[in-house]
Image (cartoon, rainbow, N blue to C red; front, side):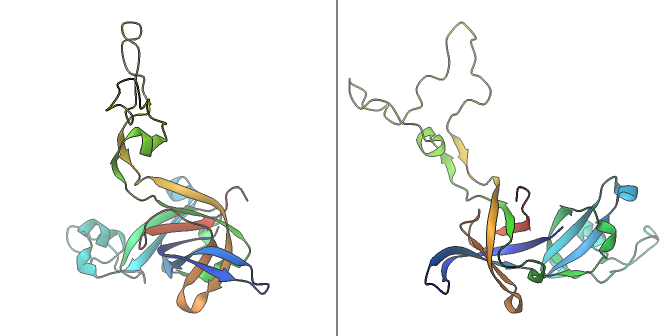
Length: 222
């Protein structure tokens, strides 16, 4: 298992030795830290929890502080353990792996685990578009611009029948909130790695806005 959390910095282009141009997205990935190790015996499945984005302790809730081991033991919580070497991180995500026992809490993960040329999946949230109509949201063609229809050219049209059925089917494509959904860009090629600056360049576009959180992992369909 190879996985990292990072921040999308934006897109640019890289040139190879022959002068061919490749559009890439630059991601500042890591360093990430293992905050929890889950095994089949303790949790029913094998995975590691990874933290990213060092922040100030005062910005975390009490539950977050307790989970990261930042609170001291007291009379109410005598079994509480102090920090096990995990920095104060803002984001937590989980990666499934078969060898979770080989990781240790506090272990640092960097971009050096990836190499140029391999395939990865990048998971993020798409840009939020707000409330959108059916033409922008679903690509509808719109209604006729003639025969007296002056205000129906961007309307969805009929959404169902009358007495027979008598209701709108679930899942009908209609106006509504667009974007801000989890999306996975699959099988993207790693073009370049910069361990000194914690940067990774992947071919093509990845979901999300500049500065948005993304998750990089091994390609599931490679």
